Structure formats: C-alpha cells, structure tokens
Length: 170
Image (cartoon, rainbow, N blue to C red):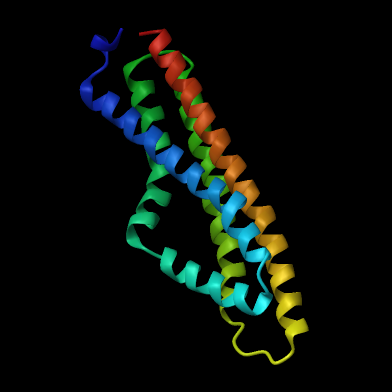
C-alpha cells in the first residue's frame, strides 16, 4: 500500500496534518484557557494583557503556519488528483476551502479588526467604560474564535477522511 506512494507525498501529507492539528490546537486552547482566564480578571488588566498577547503573537512563524495550512490542504488535493482517481482529492479541497473561509477570512475580516479596536483603547478613567469595552470585545471575539476553532477542526477532519480514502485505495 505505502510503497506506491512516494516519500515526498507522504511527507506532504504528514506536514499538512501537523500544520492543521497545530492550528486547531492553538485556537482550541485559546477558547478554553486564555479568554476565560482573562474574563476572570478586571477589565483594566484584561485589556492591556490581551493587547500584549496580540502583539506578541504577530510573529512570522505563526503567520507562515497560519497561511501555509490551506495551501498545504489544497496542494494535497492537487497532487492526489494528479496521482490517483478517487474521492480523496475532494476531501482535501474541501478542507482547504473551509479553512480559508472559516479561519483565514474570519481572522482577517473580524478578529483582526476587533483586535485593532481593542489596541486603540488607551487610558479611560471610568472603570465602567473598561468593563463595557472588554465585555463587548470578549463576547464577539470568543464567538468568532469558536467559529475558527470549529472550522479548523472540520478542515482537519476532512483532511483525515481524505487520507483514509487515499490509503484505502492505494
């Protein structure tokens, strides 16, 4: 079975799985640990903390992994379609499309603008303003992060289904 697949192709599948899993776990752990923890602090601590976290996360390695994941999913689809004729490529294509829509587009059009708005909050004297701003931000952010988490989980699951069919028919 595996002898028919090239080592490079298996390496691409493995790298793609690792990328997809890494990003899913990143979003998942944000959903279950970071935001709930920040919500337990006062807003005047949560806002600067979240701004510092967002600033620290703007690293090239995270951006590369974030943007390379859908490219890897789609590359697996193209290569599988080229090498064989079965339903595997469909699952790889769907995983890439779902990731782009549910993760990349949601991040670029909703999460990042929310983060930018929060970064503009500087010195507000009334604690109620801090609390109101944080609650609004946190509710929206958590909802959309759950969309990203679910989308990355669905994309990874579809990728695994594609791998199952690939190995089943080879």
